Image (cartoon, rainbow, N blue to C red; front, top):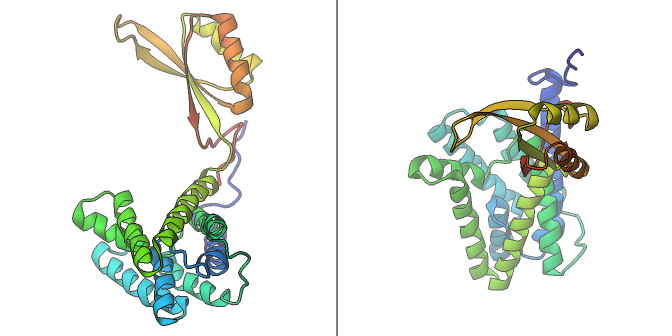
Length: 289
């Protein structure tokens, strides 16, 4: 069976246009969520946007101005200290997101309930960031600062990001109230989880590893009864040292029970390991982007 060509080739002009389109769409969604939920309710979930919320409360300065004033120097500093690994998209993102914040500043405020604002604002920011990341883009800001800290301090990147977001949330506790900071933490948690959903989707699957003395019979059952492919791995028993075949098969959630039934019907003593996997690309599952 001939392999299907990708709909858009990576690196092609169409792919570049798509990536910048995702960057703009994601930035608009983030900006709308910031202006509708987070900023009006004085919820700082971290990042440059969180700093701009605090600055606006103290000086009444438009958040977009603060974001430009921070994003551009941080990008130039990262360019100097880390080299040109960020490319044009990081520079564009550092400018586009504040512009989107400025353009959506007239949006209304759907709720003044801080909990709802933290949840829906976090979801919107996570959705927008996930779309930006799908386009291999960046909105700059403290994410670049975290990479600088990571390189020169030896701290992990995840911890470096947490340091900057934590400082913003602690500052919001001092400038606003400790309760606002707690809502900011909720918003940050929701943002992180939403990014995972956008990046990985809801198409959870299971990967099964099967060890049995009836390898051939189980292989045929999986191939022809379950209609799934499988991979045979070479292994050896840790105690006996005997060579064993380990079958690896990926199935959808609704196929797990049938797989277990088929294996048990062939070999009730088979050793089966099932674990969850977030995303599967390839034949029978999701196509490559």
